[in-house]
Amino acid sequence: MEESKPERSRREEYTEATRQALLSAGRDIFATEGYQAAGIEAISRAARVTRGAFYHHFEDKKALFDAVDVALQAETTAKIEERGRSQRKIWDRMNVGIDAYLDACLEPAYARIVIQETPAVLGNKRYREIEEAYPMALLTASLNALKRDGELDFEDIDLLSRMVDAMICKVALMLPEADNPKKLRERGQKIIGSLLGVFRRK
Image (cartoon, rainbow, N blue to C red):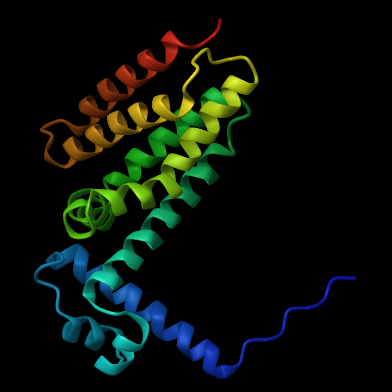
């Protein structure tokens, strides 16, 4: 019989609620005002907590931004997984996943925080670490599964995954500024599909 997990104390619940309030406020303000314009005072006020409470949870504004980015990536990855469950075949699941990711890239908060600002604020190294732990992890897992099942003929799955991910991210960067996002998206997905099709075993 499994041991039941101890109930969290009121203090622990309050601490977690405070952290979530700061993440929510940070997400809203980073998305609307951008990282540079966002102030710790304004974020704390929006979260209805003191400045001291902010620093209890986060070392500085950059640390909060990092946490917001991770939360957005985790949330998006969960949505991609959920959409993928509607498909039985791995190829179809992967295609649906790419589509779901591009949907996320059109959401204002994700587009501003993750796509536009994270590389500059956190640096490319940290940006890649978060991406590889979340959405790219799903892509890599799908490609590995296809190779394992004999449906994909390519030796270096890690390289292929990075290349496909780079293409997806490029399309994502172009979407907000595109005159015809729908057409750009369709063409981008066609190119990605064509690349993967070269290595697909018939």
